[in-house]
Length: 235
Image (tube, rainbow, N blue to C red):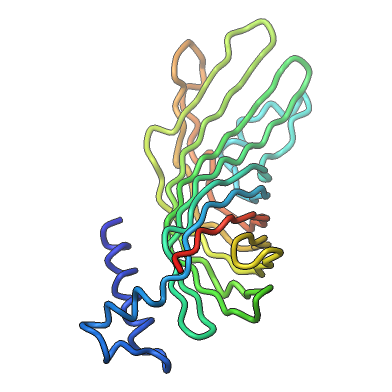
């Protein structure tokens, strides 16, 4: 994480120091240009869909009672644009978000719910078309994923499985940003691909012949999300 922040600072300096309209040569080490390029921070929330591979889970599902293959989760995300820099028509930002995606299926007297939680940190690059629209060229994020599986059978205690460690992955997306009330409120429509996995989940407590499920999530997939952002301008 420290290396990511270092990379952002170096990229931010280069971003403002080497664009055509930069005045970095007129101030000490380009620091003045960086501060003059600060646009805004902000908070955001959204809802979307995530595709994923669940080979390990699907292998142990009791399909004879009506369960289908898992692989499509839906849920929400909340986060913040920590800082954004603007030079000419380009916008670069450092951002993070937390998201929770869930897929639940029910059969006679039984419910199986897979909950995927993920923390993402990375950078975004956009091209400003006008006051109302940006093109999100890409978001590039490092992700940390955990999983929890709950098997609830009527008349029995719930069996809860959790991943013993956090799994690191990568997420990239692109899309379009619309400002109904520029520059304070924006609506983003994004689509992309997530690379992540969860090697295993272990049964928390109780007795069961199935105490560990391996490769419960064996790969990520495409996703789409709509995000509403409320900005906090610096100038």
